[in-house]
Every structure is written in C-alpha cells, then in structure tokens.
Image 1: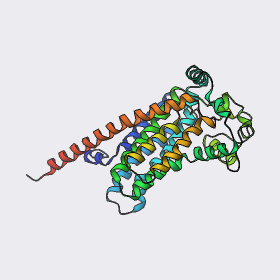
Image 2: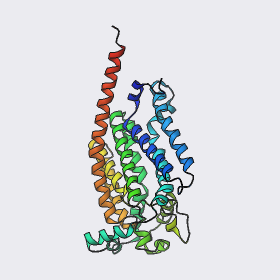
Image 3: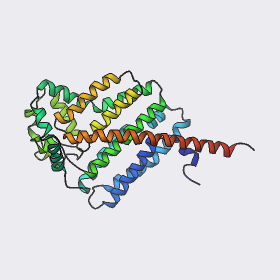
Image 4: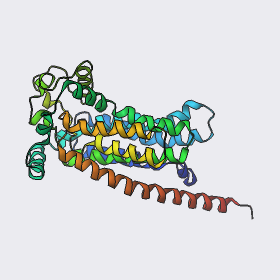
Length: 321
C-alpha cells in the first residue's frame, strides 16, 4: 500500500512536481556538502516536510470546502520561491566559494568594448534613478499581478501553466547561481558603500535600495557587505522572469498587459542602470526566458496528456463489468 495511490498523482500540477524534484535535489546537495553548509540538516528536514505537504494539500484541496486549503494549494509557490531563494543563499557560496564576476566583466568588455554600467552612468539623474529603483523594487508585484488577474477571471488552466513557467524559470535561474556565482557590478566596478552618493534618487530610492539589500541578506552599513551578498547576478532572474510575465500577459490577452510591458521594460533597464547586473546577465536572462517557455510548455503539455491517460486507465479499471 502506497501513501499516495496512483490515481491521486493526477492531482499534482507541473509546479508541484518541479518543486518537489528541486527540493529533493537541494536536499541531496545539502547532504553531499554537509561539511561546508551551515544547518544543512535543518534545510533537509524542511525540504522533506514540504515534499510531503505538497501532495497532501493537493489531496485535501480536491474535496475540501475550506477556502484556506484551496488558497494554500494554489498560492504556496509564492513563499516557496522565497524559501528556496534563501536556501540557495546558504548553499551557493559554501559549495562554490569562487566568484566569477571577473569572467562576466571580461565578456561584457569583449562584446561591448567596455562596461555598459559605466555608459549608463553618463545618463544618471536623480529622477531617472528614482523611477528605475521603484521599477526594480516592483518585481514581485508585477509577477503577482498577472496571477491575481488570471485567478480573478477563473482561468484555471492558464493560471497553472503560467504558475509553472514562473516557478520552473526561478529554479532554472537558481541553477545558474550554483554554476556561475557572482555578486554584480555594484560590488566590483563601484564602491557599494557610496552608491547613495554616486547614484542618488529623490525620495524613495534610499529606502527601496535598503529593502532590496535586506532581501539579499546584506545588513545596512556593514563595512564588508560583499561577504553577505547573495551570489545571484548570473543570469538576471529579474530579466528572465519579467520577460516570462510579459509573455504570459500577452499570450493570454490580459487587461494589464500594456502596463506590464511598460513596467517590465523599465525594470529590465534598471538591472544594469542601477548596477545590480552586468549586460551579459541580462542577455543570459533572455536566453533562459526562451528556454523556460520553450521547454516549460512542452513539459506541461506532456504531463497533462499523461494525467489524462492515467484518469482514463483508472476509469477503465473501475468500470463495472
């Protein structure tokens, strides 16, 4: 007797499967590199708990009349993405302590003949900085807005496909962090501690910059901020996932698609202007986006077809003779 009968597997979405598989992979990495990863056993325990809870809530949501169960089942990927992001923070640098900013800088200079971040500094202005810092900080709001609209319109198929593309895209970008860890030009080409003076905004820039730094586990006013920074420059997840959200909004003809286009375009520009990313990070984000959509749609279609076969087989097995 199995914990989850075969036909119950059809309740799992591609987002569920991708998350469970990625948590298992992270757990294996934690075990393999246990000697250098702090609290690895806690991370493994939490990962295995979530691997159990995901199908549990999928089962419960099928028949439960409690809305909270259905909300957890549909929206758990939001906190899960943040949880996995912070887990990679504890893993990437201990596993791969060498940063590859030097390589990304060399690639930028080979492609462009210089540093694009320095070119954009020529056009720096407090008003421009303010607008772009707001755009950069609105990243998660832009992501969530699309799914709120799909959920409100009860477009469940589109919601779950879009959710998978975003979750799958996040996990792919996290693989990039492991393979090519880097901190970004604000640490390597500029003095991180003087950004508020060298790239000032007007009202909100300072607070939003502190908010972004806190999200990357960088304490305020520490002399060695680079030691705390998350190695998440390559690829630019902001670029990859923003392009994914643009694709979802236009392919589904959402009312918000033109707002998403403008806000998302400003956000992508801000990644280099605000010195969070090298230009090659943005290019890689575009490549990751194309691969995410190309492969993600096929994976989702194949899983839906497989579930249909499983349901048909289950119906056939239980049909009265």
